[in-house]
Image (cartoon, rainbow, N blue to C red; front, side, top):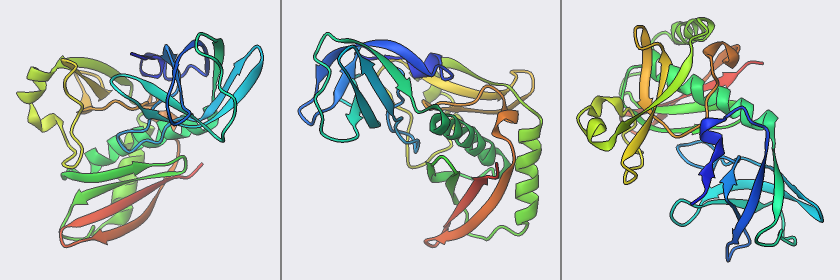
Length: 239
């Protein structure tokens, strides 16, 4: 099992770690990972591993067997031996932009309250696919409503519920194509706003900013028709 440092400390940029395994594909498994593994539409983190006798650029991070998190080298290179104590250094600029975009998409699902059929996140933009047979009539209105929520500088927090509690509240799950991971007994919820004035609450394992004001300025991108009943809404970071 790899301890998920990114989950409790999303603003941590470097951390110590110990190599516990190598994968047959040439990946590195640590006892505790600062790097987020690809999932939920969010790319895996990149960065560098530093130890006494070398360093290893990491191109991305993926989920491995069981609860392992696998760091994938940017190119074939000697790996730090099992047992090596090292320092993980995150590509923070990219991670922080991913955090901003991910939180922005949660707010987009509030502005467009329709079932979500897919989504993707990059360091410059994000998109959600909605079950939306009819086109958006007021693109400027959607952009303005999203920016208004961002500018309220709402707090973003997390909590946990049991899988049984989630089953009793199916409305919390907005995504039709991706279901929250089950089997661990608990599911992580991300809340925007306070319990008393809640803007959004949904299961999510990704990394987020602490306040919506950190997202900054956004711009509406293309709205693309995807099939008979789906439309893809693209939102860009404007700064």
